[in-house]
Length: 246
Image (tube, rainbow, N blue to C red; front, side):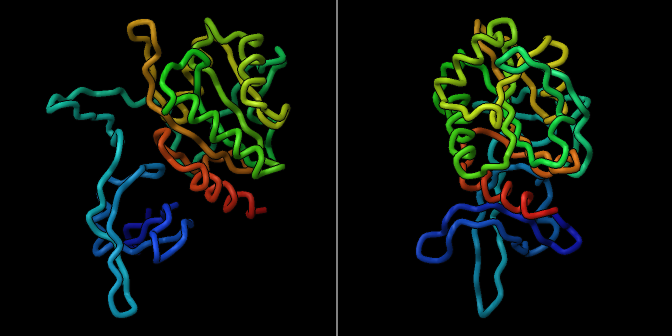
């Protein structure tokens, strides 16, 4: 997001009969139209094209805004923003977790590679959340031969390395390019917070926001995508742009 130039870089879906899905900058009518946007946000917008010029307007956020305020049937409640949340462009702190084979894994092990990170748990009952995230990673491993994929459980009590190994087989994960990680509650919460994710236990389930991070070759956070309803091609295009950088 560049308010000074009144532009925002968007990975957008296909606009039927006009343009294919791609990653490109769009100009807003004014910098004020970009107020409230943040890297990784999912938005709806209208593209206006007139006499060789174009702009976007009617920009509307989907999902949880950056201050964590959510509206639910007119009621407002606050999801706390993790205090250690890393901004896009900042270095992601190194971490030490354990993979599905019981082996230690550090983020720094992947320095020089582009890394995609998401957060799931194997007992997640909602097909549009964790299973969709895992299905997206399954497709990404087919698209990119040199991409590291890390799926971190939010349920370390249940998701032991053995359980994560079983889950990896379900999704036909190509090890070791796609690894499933667990650790202590404190370690998992620290990593999740760095990527901007909040979660808590509720009625036997784990309620959580969804964030998928892309870590650049130098260890800095290159992109963060909110939610689980994004199209895998959109995340793939963001990853491809990052992988083109040397």
